[in-house]
Image 1: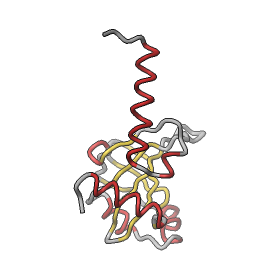
Image 2: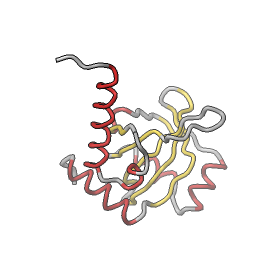
Image 3: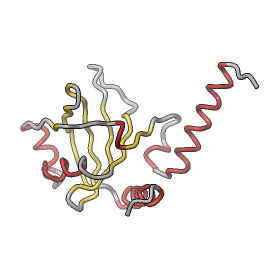
Length: 140
């Protein structure tokens, strides 16, 4: 069986939308097409902290240690569909840091060095979705 280029695009979109439906994450459902990654796709060896991002995260009651711990555990992330005017690409990360369920925004600095932009505790609904995703992966 042969597929045209248009057929392949339709199949790709259908597969992505089915994955989004299966993951049941409200923030992802608001986008027509998203890319979802599992932890092995985003390799972070160092987080770059400064006064600005420390201020943002502490304003939300999140410590650098909590953010860093997320990347030592299971987490999910996706590319932010909005590219900043300076071309900066950001990633939205969901994970558990020192027992706290967190949403973190990071951007790549160089290689495997990333800079947290902001972090805050997940909403109750997002925690439920995150737990369902972990359970689906067989992780408690």
